[in-house]
Length: 194
Image (cartoon, rainbow, N blue to C red; front, side, top):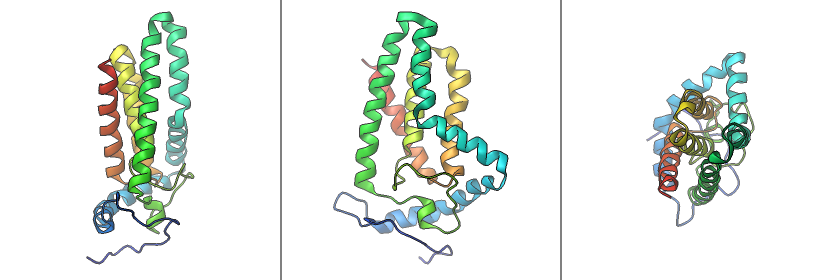
């Protein structure tokens, strides 16, 4: 299948090892998702939207979640400590799974593979799958809203904006974000069992 969209640069180490899915499968999936990537990325043509999503993404780096973990005990007292503990555990679990998957799969970011996708903020690492921002946002929000349902009005829109920001900023394919959301939901449900 020939692509109408040229590939531009590849990261060093873009080779696949025995744990990686075949490169042709990732390429086919990337081609299917490219049009969506371009549509989301065009939102950065509007400077106000670019700034909004860059700010949301920066908050999703951890600042927002750490602030929430500090604010809960300040507002709720000692009763919030089990929730904060679960958020910390799910955060560490998500980090381990995210790092392992990124190293094993090694899917380059859309902005690194296609000239038509512009990264408007620098990526934290070179690989795309899964979206760590989305994974953590869904996991933290699930745990927090499970214990404090009233936080849903704040956390659900923020989590949605974090996920969208990864697409708009040209850093992820839609399947990266979907996988991050599913992993975050699954890992948070696991942690909530204890």
